[in-house]
Length: 240
Image (tube, rainbow, N blue to C red):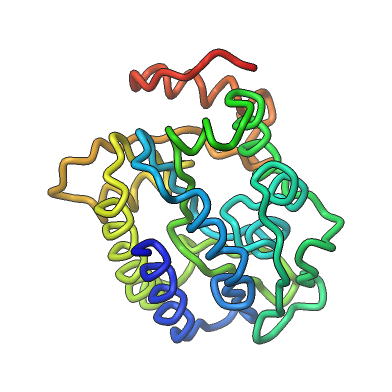
């Protein structure tokens, strides 16, 4: 499967890069949670969706635990129907342990995104016939305090080779899936999609990121996302 090949190569090439302080730990869930990630691709990446949703990178309580983009544990297990053994990152931060599907923390962003998908579409089969969710960068970056450091905050000399790999992978994913739209979940992902797909015919837009750090998302992420979809002419089914 082409999506599996793309992810495997990105995991290998991005995992070979070096990063400096203040980053002290780098998690690559496409390595240690590969069985879950592969199952996600093989189970749900089989359609040509109208919309490819692109996130930034793994969150510590979501994809870093499950290998699934925005992968809040309970929704990955109970709604997406994915569960498999999860290993450990090469170096584990004591404040950000990886316990896979035993993780008791809930990732707010993932709970919002997949919770909205469940509410709006009912069954995952209905959602994935129209959407696919993919993360631009496969790596999570942690500082010594345990603080998450997003890829856009990396030094330019470290961003450039990482973004080149991620751009190439996103380009290949888009060619594979042939979506009608590529929608960044947040402005960073939109910007990277525009860069990676420059010169191609894929329309690119964005919706609000569901992060709890966003006051707008906290006021009602689902309604804001649906307004953005409507503004782009992307029609959604009635709620179940």
